[in-house]
Length: 548
Image 1 (tube, helix red, strand yellow):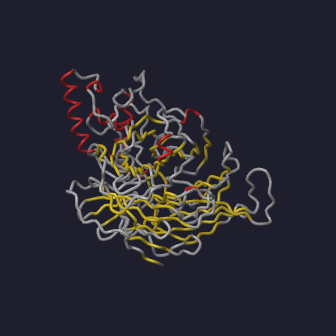
Image 2 (cartoon, rainbow, N blue to C red):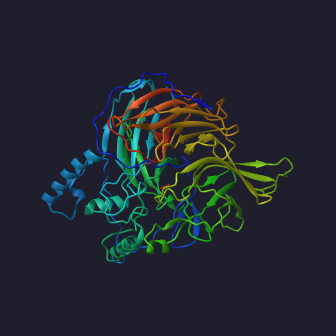
Image 3 (tube, rainbow, N blue to C red):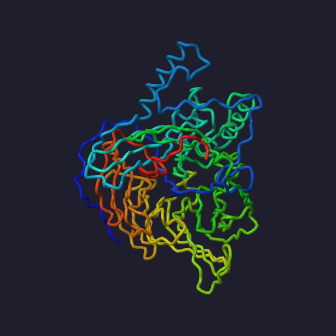
């Protein structure tokens, strides 16, 4: 095992004034999502879909949809408040402008850059996260905050960096902001015990009489970010994604609206024995791999005063392998994999035995699915307080489609490795390297690990004393196949110095794990979830509508 914390650049000595603390760190998910699982805790099924099922209109008094949300990426205007009188509207707009300047950050150009940004690293890095706009009325969990995107514009040279952060204007946030109080029950922090049941009943009662409208969505869009089909999409498990556009040359963000894929997608219901927590999944060239873990929804636990998300020791964990092009679940093959709760998967691919005979469509004969994921123990430690120390093992899980058997190998024993990325050109295909967050001391991340998936060898970059980051973002230098190697490119990570309460975007060479530059942020950036990089070319061809 190699340790690399050396710098090719001088260390930073400047500091930034301290501002209030934020949520704890949580991990994130893969950068490319094609399918989404819609999990209903009241039903024992999952739906594989490129959109989510629309929500039933729970508001019988609502005859028209909500007006488009006012975007916080522009100054508030008096006409954003049509139900108030003129003086009230002017006062509300002025106060909102002040509030937004304190919570969000307008574009700050000309950031200090130590080292030099590589010429081909030209685009915008964005990272999503949960940041509550309003103080929670009940218990709070780091998954519950409103979606906020942090954007860092990068260009070649020593002074080409800009920063801004904006809330994604979800239906949830727009309604709560207008009312000035929380309205939607927080799914993890507040839905505990009898008070959680009461909050849920009150929410449906308010919806029934028209005090809150869930028709336009009930999600916070605080988890994943993906650039797909000329759109940047902000996602969470509980709703459709939101289309967010990057404007101008400085990385400014604007919420376009909730994205329903214009009806161009298909849904494949998958029956499960009981409601299951599914945060992530894996894909190969021909298959979707569905985890059915031992972390389940048990609403009966709320009556006993506990969280409905529980570990079920009587359930056997398994993976379902479904041909990607199928329109129903009839050909899904379930394979048991004990002790395999993976919050995140890095990649998956197919291995075919030489004797397997080729034929039309994906064949199960002589084929093994290899899944790379981080297996967590205890499995429900993300959702329930406990004294047990957490263990997160980066594992290779092999699913034999011929025999229906599985095997599991810990790739790097003794190190907590969570939420990582592989070269995006290798997704669904055999991968040699993955770049992982070193989740120590949990739930913080002390550095980055470059892992050789074949040998288990690790090269580490440690951020330093009281410095912690989150998910790594791998930006390939060139496409694989264009004379490029898998580990050619750069690693991006937002790092927070808890001593000085300052933050910076650290840039490493992926090949040798050495820092070549950092961009100093104008204020402390809270810990967050998923991130992705959008190139200058992708910026130029962005769509500005919610239609496909």
